[in-house]
Image (cartoon, rainbow, N blue to C red; front, side, top):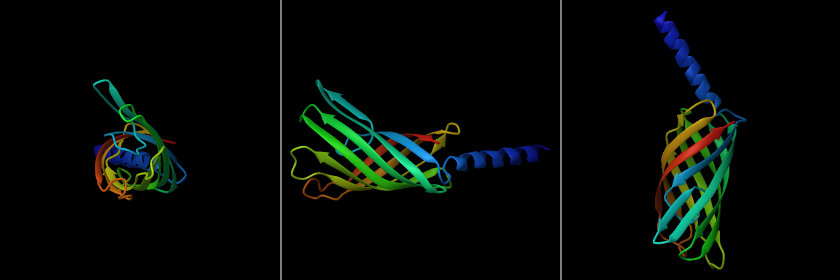
Length: 167
């Protein structure tokens, strides 16, 4: 009886997890990340009366089980350089085994009065911790490859903590 009960609980748990990333579902997420130009995450840096922050949100649609196409928008402000940056992102997110999110996307930024604007291709991986049927926390690591050497030749590594809503 005990084995039967444990098997039933395991089947129910796996069914619940995969339902969150099934075809036709929606995904809304944001990340808390280290500050960089051109991001769709939340960040805040304050030192000596100067403030640098970013706000952003990504949304996605699961075109098949575990694979979502995503778009994102972000805004950042830097009181030191008096810059305002608008960011955009287009990409895909695949949940390996419905728990390990793998991302590939293109992120660009528009900075007023700049001749060159930054853009990156990003690769990321993490782990989805589902807190219920509609909420997950997704810590992860992201590697961004600069696509505009005139703006920046540096590739960037980000540590993210994502918060996602699944509908």
